[in-house]
Length: 439
Ligand code: UGA
Image 1: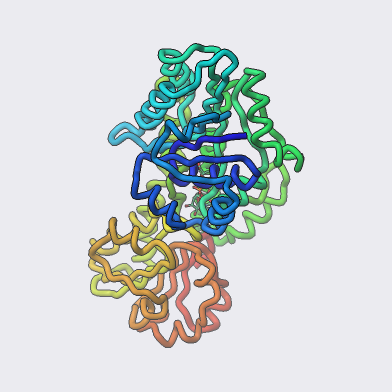
Image 2 (image 1 turned 180 degrees about the horizontal axis):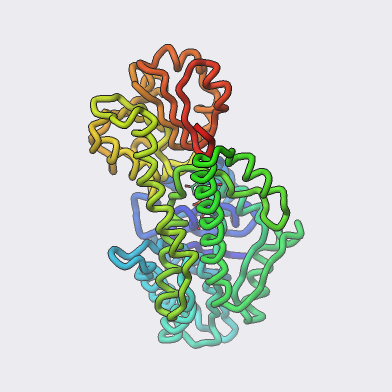
């Protein structure tokens, strides 16, 4: 099959490269010539483990190429994927669909209209219910209805594990009731089909909603365990044991029950907001989703207070070492990262911040230009009055704790990701605070 991927952001690039690795011929298109130049020179504009090698392999095999020219990219194509951004619109939280509609207009002008020509236009961007209908309307203004079909095919890729999530998904969701489009989509995902991955074919609107419902449910699960963590701290229970105790029930499941500083990233905050807005428009109350949004925002703010309390109620003049800035490990993504809420609050309270992150420091500097950064975690720890773990990068788990203690000015560790064991930390002489344990 020949695939055109419009948009080489996170989703477009990973999906395009993985389709090429399945054996399809893929052309990735982006309006940004700098991005395309980088990709053509063998570089990767984002950080995702394994992606660079997979790009090199498929470019070498002649199945993957990059261009700014949509017209050439669409020649002879079976499926054009729209994988452009849908950021939250400033002010109202609605998903901004201008990039999706602009892509649809451009694609419409290039769809072949010969006798038997048929192109599937696949929406991979996360879009509110009904967007596919609008894309179809835009296309139909330019092209005869028989020449195309608009399909929804949401992605469920986690940053940092995206290649594995694409190649070994729990399921693939495809929103179309058109048999020709269904045949194309089946062929595209045939390698997964052979692995017995369930492919859920459904109505387009239902498929669009599945994406939001999945993210909102996962955000709810995290927020639920975060609330249990607060309760555990207050009543003297242990949240990790609670998570294990409930997670072994197959109806609940053990995933996404790690208590922490609140969820961040480019998806959960944006998608929960957009879902709430969609519901508002439809005059439906989604009280759970709205509460999750509020609780998560409040939690991120409260984390700064938790740090201050752990340090005796006043951080004025204290040097605090922040380890981990990205919203989660294995990414350089800073979007809605808890560190962006926590650090300015500590600065406001008079703390001096020294930060380290293995991948996200360049991104972080754009948001937090006035704090100090170091290239090595031990340098950040040296002379600090406290270490705060904000993101659970593996390299922090394997620290030489005796060295950490020697370097610190005062042996305070505040672990917002529960990566250390309280008993061991206390035995080593640390004053150790984590999430969801009695003090
Ligand atoms: C999320 C979903 O997991 C993907 O399935 C989805 O495709 C993607 O959004 C998307 O819509 O594009 P992602 O945002 O990359 O993926 O990251 P997650 O691994 O889901 O983590 C999101 C946030 O939740 C992070 O801040 C993480 O630290 C937090 N989290 C996650 C917890 O606090 N506890 C957990 O148990 C799990």
